[in-house]
Image (cartoon, rainbow over all chains, first blue to last red; front, top):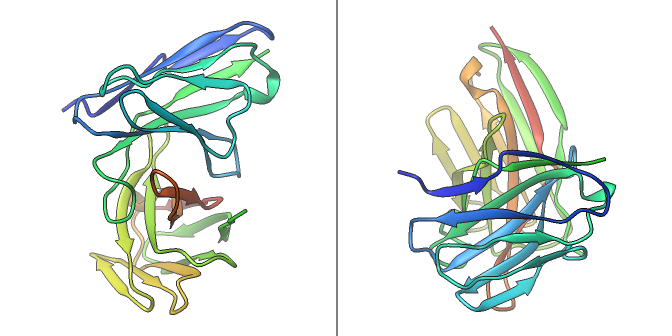
Length: 114
Length: 113
């Protein structure tokens, strides 16, 4: 079972470069999320989507953009990479809005901005 | 801003010992989830507690939700090396188009053989 798949697993960017972190899920979940995880800081919500064509900002959206053209895919775009965006990025999905249902996470993308 | 503080941040114990991890907030949550994360992987849900005062057991793990739904604890009995990992609590915050998870700062547990 694939679940939530993130690519790439690792990436090094130079300051000012742009890139897209890919996320796809095969569970037909409507809800999808992007988090970043910094050491000792837990996970912070960047953006989320409640269905195809609908996205909204989370706690730390600055410097990022998202799109949701299909139920399966939820890519995260960094336009002008900055050192502060060095982090581990996790994509997650859930069948329903969180409460009793788990969020299913991918294995993360480790991103370094130099 | 809703915050969840976990303590301790890091815990190193011997196999067979007991331990408790705490998750505290000044905010009330509709429910609270506990996740475990292993190196190089995403978090995996262990349990969801919903009712104030609720206690749930998962084999050697016991989870409790505070009466006021502001705090929670995770107790592990007779820890095993397989329990090693990062434990994250996450409060469910209602509002907007979807409920959101507010994650705690995490407790890194190392169980030595």
